[in-house]
Image 1 (cartoon, rainbow, N blue to C red):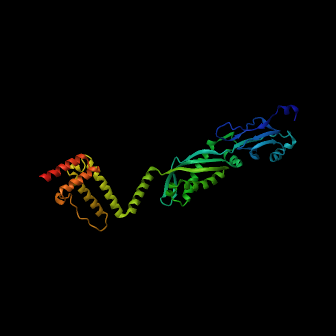
Image 2: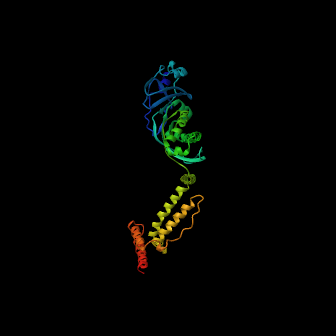
Image 3: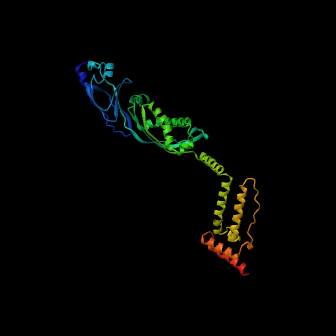
Length: 346
């Protein structure tokens, strides 16, 4: 090699990466027509790894620190290039820097429901959302499996690939587990633990370490949720039994009577009056109780209680009690009281 051609060569004295691009995980040092000078300095910062690639093959990997590039620090590359002969065999390899920082606060979700097998419902479709964090754990694997020889590889690009991997892994993990979906939905920590182990193994195949994984929400599509609500409602009715359901129905009927009495056009509004309204409520409750008692025929109840069954004074006292408790309106009280007094006076 002539002195002139030697001088015209351009050599790199310092190789380093300042991580100026936001979200860049892998960056190739621009070589162009440059060659690495014997004794050059390689600066690898904390949370970085530098990889030397020669003709598509990874030759050497350097962790954080300042490294002087000589035949003693590049044994593999020296053997490949015969660098011990100085510049008789020019040394020019690609140098890639990888960020090993934890990428925190990354969101994941299922835009479309994922179909999984469930021991309670056979096949169901699930939506879920949460957060996760990861980092490059093995630059060699990440280079060969993910980033390749691109000038730069960003976080968004790798997450596009991880998204499909996460959904497939989640479906397999939940489907293979024998934990019912309802149990997982009620305990999202349990669901995250079930998925995380399988997901970490899937990430590791690409040189990525899963740092954190959590489930923030899990839900069913609307039509499946409606079907589940109906099933839960039917189960509640079955567990209550006939006696308890009868009591529940009586409670509903009793609760509705005062509301009807207070509204214009309610029981009082149709001319029955407060006393007749209470009697109708008793008749309805007794009828319902008989309907839920197996094998017992309930005799028909009278629609109203004869006026002579109790004194008018007692009725007036009960009527005043209903007014004081707010169960009837002042108008109902006044009109019914006038009718009872009219019957009393004659």
